[in-house]
Structures are given as structure tokens and as C-alpha cells.
Image (cartoon, rainbow, N blue to C red; front, side, top):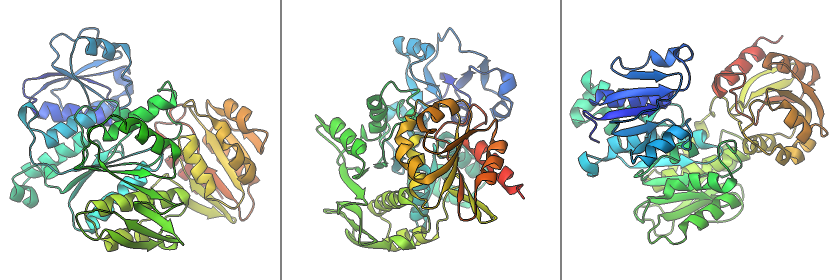
Length: 486
């Protein structure tokens, strides 16, 4: 992508904004970053910016004359007035993901150049686990990968790291003659609906939609609009690409059917299923099998692993394992490499993470359970009584969807944050329901209520921003509080 001497305005100073700003500044662009927050609230981010990057903080600029293009961070809605005004003036608006894609996959004037294919994973829940598993499987099979996106490290930042490695004399980078970030066989990327809102030419060689359940409905006007954002992951794919879908999720299959209609070209489509034999990866008699009819590389049919051998537990993790296995096998991994990773991978931090056992009570950190669908999957994994700590900033979630599982499995419901009252109205008649002013008191309340053989679970069904920096901060504080119990 040609960026030299371009005038660029970046909306949003988070990880993505920093990566985009520094990448463009390093490529010779004149970059300005704007954010609604004042400088006093952005200290750690400001310290990460290149000195040449200009700032417009505490509000968005009213004038964009001379701007060649705009880059928008995922956390900034595309329908805010400043961005609407920018588009009315025909100024291109790119997402940080689209920017990274163009740097990696395109030359000047949009000319294609040799680049590693993108393998992209989206869905309401399970993205990080599936993306991590896929990356590990590819590496175990001997492929070189670049991992980034919504998983926590912006792709633009990873490109910068690769360029720095080349400058420092990395033997691998020198041998390739390319930045280390390009010296990969695959770019593995976790993609959110927010990132997909702002793509244009992004074209993954392989993609997966894990599930589509109600989430971020405080940002989207309807489930259809949210599903449309997810469907953008295969918008530019063609018959040279592949797409993996959850055959057991009606919203996912309906979304694909809706947005496939009328297209002349669409990707080779496979699926994964716990319930039926399918063209893809499926569960049968307690074992995972794969079947890819017409696959050019071998093998196209066989056995992967016994479900009981998979280290990470739970229905949702079985689905994540099948999705990652399907993508890895389609990308050329051997079944042995896939199985080895599934036997070894312990799971991700903040996703049903075991913290400790105290007085026979297990404490589980599921801080990444930020929507109703995630909490549903989490509760399905427990047969013992659960003392559930939930609440935070509501994302217009329908908490009544949790009623069957709360009634069946939750003994005490301890609510925190802005959504506490709404959650009580939806669920409070099903279990002993208590309010706590903060997370520490919530944990101590749960400890007093829990008995040997039971579980204390933090699975909020909400965003964290009313009380914490992010879900990671919330999870770390939970672990610290639990670690201090006696």
C-alpha cells in the first residue's frame, strides 16, 4: 500500500489506533490521531505513539480538508456524525484490519503481490480459543504464522514488529528479503463484527463463522444488522477460498443462506457439527471425524481424536476444537498435528479458567463471558451447583434467555454493575439473588454461600467498562481477590 506523503486521520486511540498510526508514520504518511477522551485519560497509549504523530484529543475535529483517507479503530461506531460527514465527502474510510490487509497483500495502486493467505475466524463466542488453536495446529504442522487481530495484538503492530526484526538483523528476515511479518505461510486473525464493518477488499483464503448469538445490540439496531456484519467475512471470497460454518447454529446457517443468494461466486463451504455427520468435521460415537469431498490435498477423510482426549472441556470447547480442526486440515495440516494440539492445549486465560480450589469449592474465571450466549455455554459445562457472579455494562442483552439454565444450575446469583437491576428482573425469581457493590464483596458473598463440591463462577454476560478497564482487568482482579481468600 502506498502511504508516503499521504495525509491520514485516525479515529480511536487504542491498540488498533496505535498500530495503524505507527505503521503509517513509519511508511512516510502525515498522521493525526483523534479520540473523544482527553490526554489525561490516554497516558499509556500516548507513550506508545511515534513522536511524529499529531494529536486531536478531547473530541473529534470539525474539519478534514486535505485528508487523503481515514482509518477507524474497531471501538468507534461507523455511524457517528464525523465519520458520516467524511464519507459524504468521498474520503475513503478504512478499518485497521483493512489497512493491515492492504499492507500485507497489495502493492501500489491495489496491485496484488505475493503474500501469505489470511485465515480469519469470527463468531459471537469462541473466537480467541479457536484462533489460538488454529495457530498452534499450523505451527505444529511446520507452517510459519503471523497471529493477530481482535485476539489482542493489532495486525498493524505485528507488521511493525516484523520490520523491526529485519532492521535488527534477524537471520530469518534477512534470508527472506522481506519483513519478518511477511515471512509467514499464513496470517491467522481473529475478527470481530466491529472490524468487519470497515472492510473493503479484505479477502481471507479461509474463514469460519463459529456462531451468531445476540451481542453488541447496544451498537447494532437489530440481530439482522449484527449478522450482516459477521457475514462480511466471506463477502469477497470466491471458489478459490473456503468457509467453515457451524451446522448446529440456526442463525449462522440462515445468515449464510441469506447472503449467498444472488452471488455468482462463493467459497467452497464446509461445516462442523456435534449432532450430525456433515461435510467437514463432526462428532460420531464420541470421536471427531473429518470428511472433505473433493479436497485436492490428502487426506480428505479420516479420524481426528476422541472427544474425551481433548484437554479443554465443555460443549463450547468441543465446537471450538472442531472448527479449528476443520480450518487447519483444510489449510494442509496433518490429522496428527491437529490431535496433538487438542490433547495439550490448556485453554485461554479468562475463559472458564480454573483459579483455585478452597474448602472443596472451585473458583472459575470466565471474565470473557461478556454476552448471554457465552454464559449459556459456560453454565452448560457444570453439573454441580453454581454461585454465579454476573453483571456489568449491559450490551442490550436478553438475559431472559438464561432462565432455563439459571433455574437448573445456579444456586446463588450475585449481581454487580450497571446491569444488576435489569438482571434481577429477568432472573431474580429463579435463585437466591444478591447485590454486591463491587467485585471483592461479590466474591466474599459467594464464598459464604458456597459449600464443598460447588462452584463459584465469574461469568458476567456484560461488558466490563462500568467498573474495569476491560475484561482482562476484571479477570485479573477476580483472580487476585480469590487468591487472597483464606
